[in-house]
Amino acid sequence: MHNTPSGARYDQDQGAQSGCSPDDTSWHGRDDRGVAHLYLLHHRHEARECPVVFAAWKGFASPLRHRPAVASCASGGHTIWWKVEAETGAKALEQLPRYVAERTTATEVSEVEIP
Image (cartoon, rainbow, N blue to C red; front, side, top):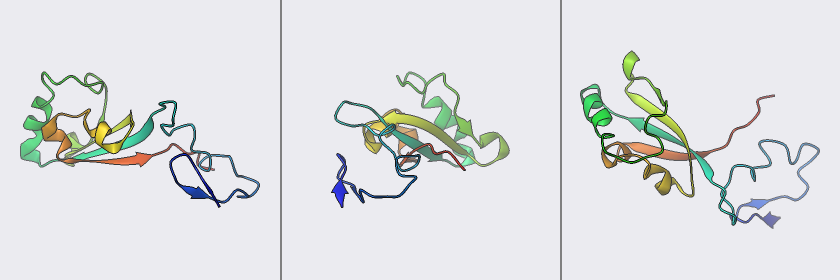
């Protein structure tokens, strides 16, 4: 067993497909050189909170402003998702206004090719 820079353990001999997505996560993780991790932000609110959620962005400086997000508000789901890069989940949530961040989870993800 070996350790990655993040402390994760792995077997050196992982088979013929080793090094292929999703085995090779080095392309998406923030390492010692400052490359960002990828997070999926999952926000949920009640229908009555919709106006407050969108108003919370006014005057809030964020790289997410004026960029598309995937949302289900129009179909009654009242969920919004963003894909963001950040050093940590906490830093990913800092890209959201406080009201929105308090109702959001950050999950580290990676893109994989589906065979």
